[in-house]
Image 1 (cartoon, rainbow, N blue to C red):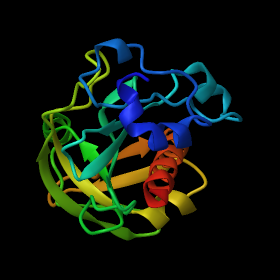
Image 2: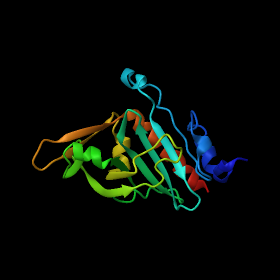
Image 3: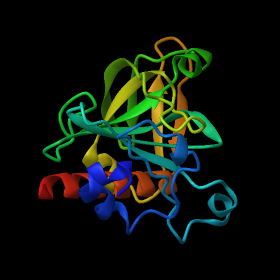
Image 4: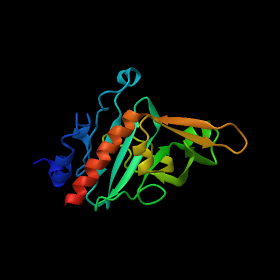
Length: 203
């Protein structure tokens, strides 16, 4: 068995979702497992022409958590991240059970900053602070940002919006700005999160 044999239970649970392995899996450090998941079928024509979302599952034997990170290749300044405990519970975000919408500090600065964030119909999203990721490039060529500003998004918010999720960032003395988290990214990301949590809970 290869080095991924140490995470056989998790890998087996992901098998049904994986379309292709990370192209740089051969350069993966020992005991790191990663996958890149495709966008779901039935996407609109614009999404169909776009590159599929990148979703990586990252785990290290010494870590108490498994990370799921997702973004799109045409917009790398923001994405979604979950931290899952070895018991199969979401433990990231502002509070337990939240996902983390991350943005690079440079992107936030270029947009003029923000005082708070929200989604329609007015749900306030909590700031989850600045985070540094020293394992942002586990496969060498598909990297998430090393430093991010986070917004906690409740699991129910991601799952109940049928369309892409528009997040509004409010500024005190200037106009608001928004980002759109595409539905195909959300679906691929949640599919990976669900598979990871289910596999860990069966252990």
